[in-house]
Image 1 (cartoon, helix red, strand yellow):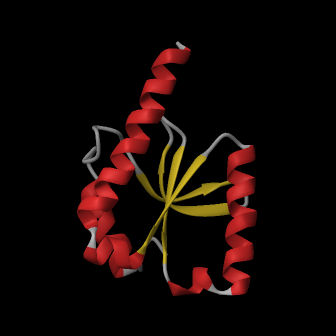
Image 2 (cartoon, one colour; image 1 turned 60 degrees about the vertical axis):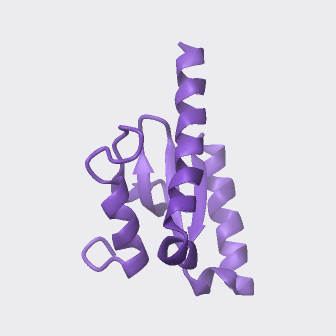
Amino acid sequence: MRNFPTEAERRLWFVLRKHGLCGVKFRRQTSIGIFIVDFYCPAIRLAVEVDGSQHYTKTGLALDRERTAYLTARGVRLARVTNADVYWRMESVIEYLTNIVDELMMKNTAMR
């Protein structure tokens, strides 16, 4: 998938790359245990998934619950956004992710 991202992933990567969101570094298509996440910021342990229509089937929802539980158990926060949100509400996606990044950065600072 790294060589063939979806259009929504390409659009979001344009925002996240080169420390473009709150100055933190994101990686694309990163393995975390048995799963590969669309985007990952190791400094604050934040994974971002861009969900297409397959995620809203009975099977897709069950797999997403399993993935979320697995990542959460390993201390990774998972943020999900939809393709439609990336296409039509990118400002809201950026605001949503910025709020999570800010929260995690404050939490990391408080723990030091």
